[in-house]
Amino acid sequence: MRVTLGLAALAVGASAIPTELRERQDGHNSKPCPKKPLVTKDALEKDITIKKLMRGAQQLEDFAYSYPARNRIMGGQAHNDTVKWLKKELESTSYYDVTLQPFSNYVMLNGTLNAFTIDGRAINSTILEYSASTPGLVTAPIVPVNNLGCEASDFPAEVSGAIALISRGTCEFGLKSALAGSAGAVGAIIYNNVAGTISATLGPPPRPEGDYVASVTLSLEEGQAIVAQVAGGATVTGTLDVLTDVQVITTNNVLATSKCGDKNNQLWLGAHTDSVGAGPGINDDGSGTVAILNVAKSLAKYNVNNAVSFGFWSGEESGLLGSTFFVESLSPEAALDVRAYLNFDMIASPNYVHQIYDGDGSAYGLSGPAGSDDIEAFFAGYFKDLNIPSNETEFNGRSDYGPFLDANIPAGGTTTGADEVKTVEEQAIWGGVAGEILDQNYHQAADNVTNLNEEAWLLHSRGIAAAVAHYATSWEGIPERVPANGTAKRSVREPVVRKGVKGGKVTLKLLRQETKKIAAMDTASHAYEAFPTFDTYSAPTTPQHDHDAPIPTTSDITATISEPFSLHTTNNLVRITTPIHIRRLMYIGYDN
View 1 (cartoon, rainbow, N blue to C red):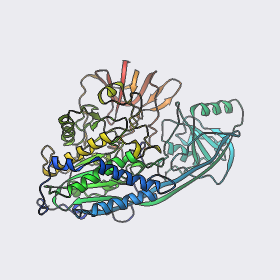
View 2: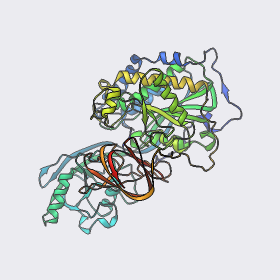
View 3: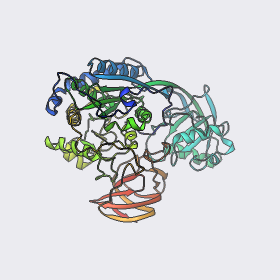
View 4: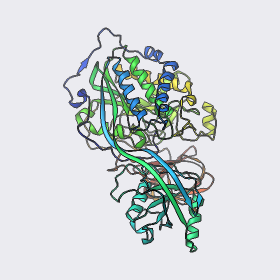
């Protein structure tokens, strides 16, 4: 599951789209599987076992640990091994037409911070993904920029030949680094605007503002101290030695479509095959990859009425690159063949919750395209039949369903959570540890086989099997796809209690808040401005907003929203709704 949004994939050559998706056929274009029984829910679920799932997870970990990097990042050797393995496993069934869909993009294969000192003192720091290298060891004065480094005018002439010191906030990290490079800086230090460390990306190059410079992170305390020293007339000297390997690589999606079933009404399922650089990515998203692979292999025993297709996406961690490339490669006619899309990203989290994407918009106010509500209802029924509680999770743009929603394709799926903090209420429902994130190994080296929750994984994997058996035999509840008529692809539901449409500020006393939604503007006064961070639906390009700043949970927060918004409350839940995005906060009072 990604944290920040990347740029669109760079296409090279013709895309490898399965033949059955290139041209919509007349009639049903259906081919039965001879001498196979029609798939049933019970039969397909029974085929999915934890032994098979763990065997697949171990294979992915073995790929990662076979190389010094011990990860499966896009373009790395272990990721290439993953792609080859998936293709081989799918082809072995003789049930699918299997193709590789190549696309190209930038990737940072390696990054090493050999030295970072301030006035001779070693600093604990991280390299921002896609950072440039320094030409060896660089020593230069550190020059704070004006404001937040989001405009070329923020960079004084003194930045040329120096290391620019820039506060986090308002605009994306990549813009800050590119503007520093354009101003002649030899490096950039981006310091946090709240307590804690920064682990983030500049986003794949190139940028219109210029080339990136070597870019590293710094704590809020250290950054403010340097600003104060320079303001007092002192000269602060930094030393940087950064070595990164950023290359344009070609990677592949793995696409598999059943040879039998109606090709004009396909069910697509997807999971991503890449990890972040920190570790092997066995929950994120080995769990989804292995689950849908096992369902695909088991489905090969059965006949289907509707064709079933599986997309194993590359480049999710760099910004949904593979799934975006696939969807954008479809002709309008071929896109209509995709009746629905199911996404599975992180379904074995140790401190799990059982969540279903909010297709009808009842929980978060923003529904998916028509049919998404039926998908949500199906999974809710699956859990209910087992007497297992579940709840909704937001379509927030953090996984590969995003491009499908953008193409007006009904979508849904389940997840066990990523870096969200488990609440006391959630602990009472599902157990685990309140106050800790749902996967404490998220984007870490410890995201390995030993930290999977087997019970949750098997439950969600069998849920995938149940959904495949259902939609492979009937599209009841999912409307027929029709050409777009210019109407909105997603709709905002009317809130239960509405406080009016306005623009301006609202002050909230917080009990708890979902972070990664509002970027810090002014740390001292806790003033924040909301950005359309997850607007993958109407923006002409995907912005890379600095959207992962943690926010204090004990202070009053003033959220400044520049566009019209409505404030509405239900059962101590405050939602701030703008035309293109939603913010959710828990509160003990509000003043607006």
